[in-house]
Length: 66
Image (tube, rainbow, N blue to C red; front, side, top):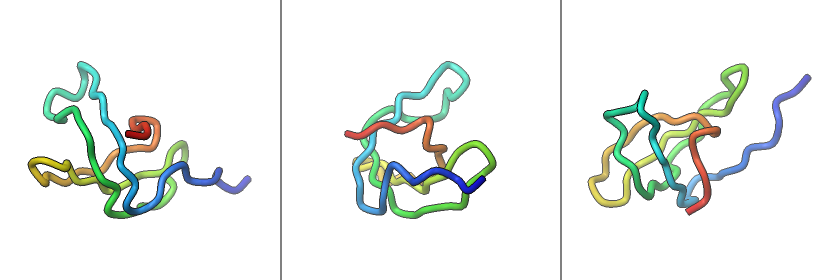
């Protein structure tokens, strides 16, 4: 079965709300800067924090529209 359609595109603003298992993730608004491949259960995205410009990779399930 092919993977589902992506929810986000490069340039979209998203929010990350890290859980207790992600103590190093800064909550807040990020911009999608890159699309990464399907990882079996989720798409991965490269995101950049709008204030401190820190980049990280996040699964689609951990993002919501800003």
